[in-house]
Length: 267
Ligand code: ADP
Image (tube, rainbow, N blue to C red; front, top):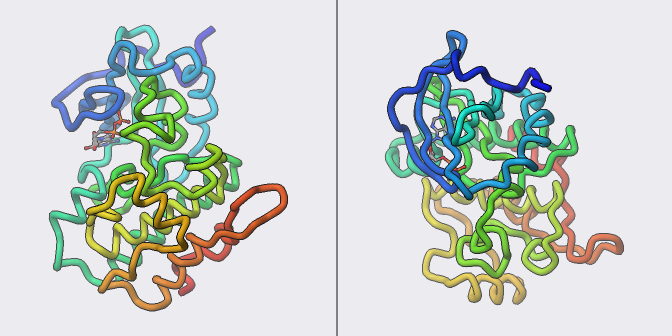
């Protein structure tokens, strides 16, 4: 049976390419008077049956700081995913292109936008699993929104999904994710700390000159990313909070921080 999340290919107009990622090409397009971004899923890149089950849940997640999934076109081959169009592309490129020209208010505003999107995900018991500046997108009004939430679960590429793999985002991962693949909203908070670091360094790569193995070693030794020059003390304190380890009983190596204290707007 067709759900409301099924997009009729007759209503979908495809346009120019705007990017490409793990799943394949992303085109801009139109769907029911809306400008959309369409992910054309490459053959063999996604576990499609599992994704279709989850698509219903994901289309129901709706918040002004999340990139909306409008629906999925499963009749089309390859399958395609229809999202809200974010005219200014991914945040990591946006930051690098504007180095030295962004105010403190702008940087803090980006962190606040993303913390709101993430707080909404947590309130819906939804774990992002891959929060990073590259997975946030910028709208025509310079609003930053969280994208690609939960999508790594459907990637068919061991290099990306195994914590041993070369494409696994170790540098954004909490110790319990690296050690036990224990994903939670708390591991999203860890990633949010690294995200804030990316914002305040205007798009630098975390632990730039270290290999994944060296990063794991440094974290185990208690080392953390350093305060970006532009980050106020209060923001740096928040980052450090995100990167706390407490030896909880039920969650080995969990950290202290919940979204309640990562409310950047209150700094
Ligand atoms: P994947 O999930 O396949 O890895 P990404 O989400 O990384 O793909 O998207 C690849 C690129 O396509 C992004 O870096 C961005 O430039 C562009 N893109 C993705 N989604 C959108 C969107 N909703 N609006 C505008 N551009 C997008």
